[in-house]
Image (cartoon, helix red, strand yellow):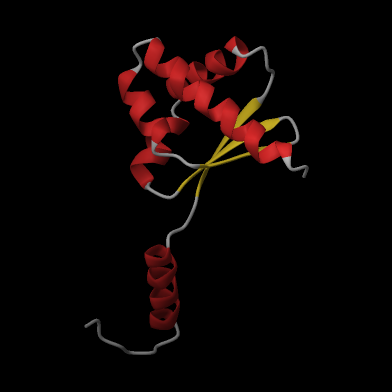
Length: 109
């Protein structure tokens, strides 16, 4: 990764958010504005959302189509991938479920 790549992805994502606002797609504009973990991997724009509502909104076919329009508007040809990241609370709940399956008893405080 070169030093200019992080700036490039931030610029691309910022223009996507701007495009959504200028095209009166308010809900998607707000949701995309809350997504800050964005990367370019090969020929793919990867959006990483921690919150379920962000993931649900951005990963819908309609939202993907609108984001794709914003990418094309910039003269780019990138695929889109949306990933739901696990939060620390999710990981703790998974660990507790594993312990329960092993027969270990505990109580939440």
